[in-house]
Image 1 (tube, rainbow, N blue to C red):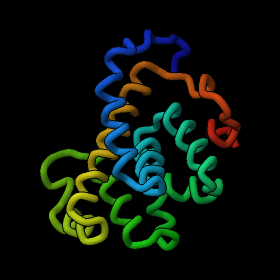
Image 2 (image 1 turned 180 degrees about the horizontal axis):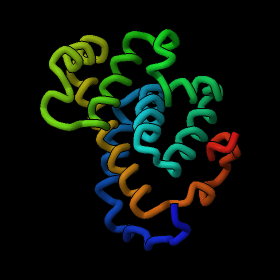
Image 3 (image 1 turned 90 degrees about the horizontal axis):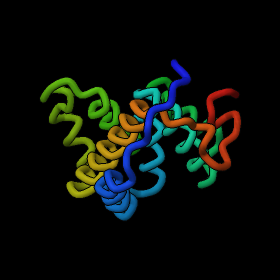
Image 4 (image 1 turned 120 degrees about the horizontal axis):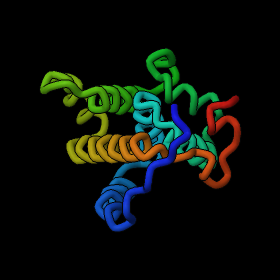
Length: 158
């Protein structure tokens, strides 16, 4: 990775993104938001978003172990409920999407069974939102050290 910084996106361009963020925050339970944000950011390797969401999850009472398990959930399935696993599996499918069959009907039906029809759509919007933020953070090379109150764990140095 190069040290060359790129100019940030103009603040006015963030308005639609902040609208998505507001929508998701009002409709997705905080714990499920943390799961989605941590997993998608880990898959995308967005160091800025990982630092931010590690910090935020721990601020909301998550242990370092729980944060790490969410990022690498497929190796820790037993610690997640069926509803959490469905949300995490949907996060994986949407984040790594590569065509219509990326999100099979069986998975979508399972997400709806655990979260309801509206809940499934709201989870999808949460996944879409964090993936968009990840792409902005990675492309513009946002520096995780610029975030307030992050520590070595949040920065992936522990």
